[in-house]
Image 1 (spheres, protein in one colour):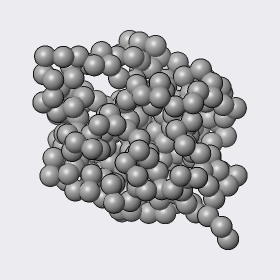
Image 2 (cartoon, rainbow, N blue to C red):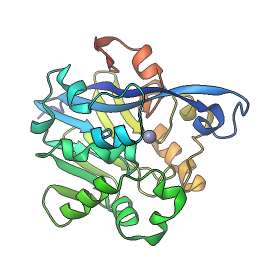
Image 3 (cartoon, protein in one colour):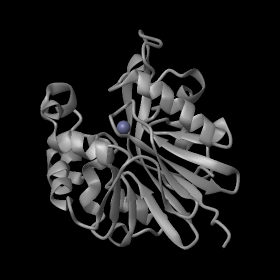
Length: 257
Ligand SMILES: [Zn+2]
């Protein structure tokens, strides 16, 4: 059977936020600022829909006072997707802006790397300030409650989850971040999430300043570049260009490929 061809959509759900440029790209332009957005991604093809990352839940968005926030459920509606009926969610990593909205997808199987899950759920270091700062305790409690259930698939490394959809363990930003290799009309594309905040990282090797393991991160860049059909098909987690430089299909929704 032929492998399905998928389309990839970026859906902005919050932002823009102004950040020190040196936080977005480690030690670059230390006296400048730049802007980022928060996104989720949708992959559609072969009769399937896969959502990559969950965005932020409304309650936490309020607590954190997120500028330009729209409930990810409402952003998905703009391309006729019903969060309550989504069957596959890839959670790239357990930072609040990517995992907080996990409860918005009550029917979905959640794909996470076991290493990532175990660190945030069981390692006391995850309760220390630098990690706590990016945690949503409510989402983490919900995830902990899914342990042992079929809805939570904890993966040990690279794994094909559907024909033409493969997850890659790409540590660096977090201990068990995963990216998504997607079979598209242009070849193998990668939804990289926070393996980079901006497109430039995949060319320069300069990641964001939110680092768990820099050595692992460099190896992850080698892996990502080797798997993608071209550098232009590797999509980062927070770049404004994800919306600005691609065809618009709805408000704050673009088709990347
Ligand atoms: Zn992020």
